[in-house]
Length: 349
Ligand code: F6P
Image (spheres, rainbow, N blue to C red):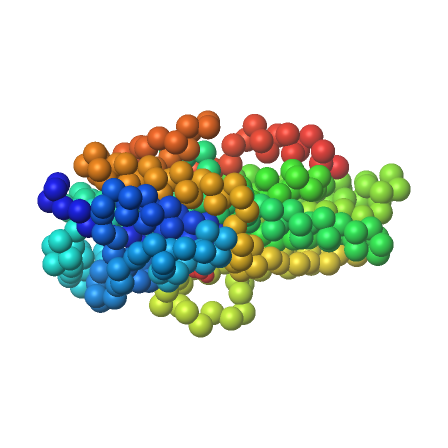
């Protein structure tokens, strides 16, 4: 296996800005070293159902700034399909691959680790707007989502001020509040609600008190950011009204912003409006930071393949690109750095 000059690449889980920059960098770096690169379509489905294409410099040119993924993405896991792992391993042999580069978030990378333990040589690259992958300071896509959320908050502030309202923005963040924290900090938000901090009755009352006291002090608008994964004591959050893809992910979140808005209005009598960024924060052009991180990760992945250092995930530590064994990353969640949250908290109230 070690001498083979062909490897595969796939993008699993939810998409994010910067995936194409990573596909481009990996492919172009590989071509320079005389590797052939096979792009598998729609995550693991490409290997399971034999959907792929050879990637060359023409297909990967002019895509560094394109959102989404030219390979397509899905949340399909070989571990949830009959004979899935065997089918993936068979496809790997048939294509005569040396390794697979798996671009994924927490879920995809945990599956990748299990596949590695079953004998599939692979390299992981962390990507998700949620930034909740263990073992790296940042994931591809996070900074773009933060920029989009910050722009949205800046816009919401001006209309909130005109109408003397409390404005709530719901952002993504299934298990963690990274986007909420970084965007809220950049915007100077008056409160940031994240899954890492329980919103019990006491915290909800304190939030309402704080919003009322701002009004009493003559500040007649407030900005509140809430991550989708936040739970509110005593309130049921029904989730999005449109749930047509139950087979892909039965646990779709969404709706906490609206429930929070109604709660604040009830408890304070203040005028509240709610917005949700939904998928807007996951689409479109990646910011320069994500393009450059994706490029560095792509090059690192090819280096690891050349060294036969499989079962690793590329990682950013400080300003250094390095790698970490996938088994240390799998089934773990990287929660918000509370030092950063505390900085944002300085400006609450
Ligand atoms: O990619 C992570 C994420 O953005 C989560 O924050 C969100 O809950 C989830 O994806 C929704 O993804 P989808 O509806 O595409 O499965």
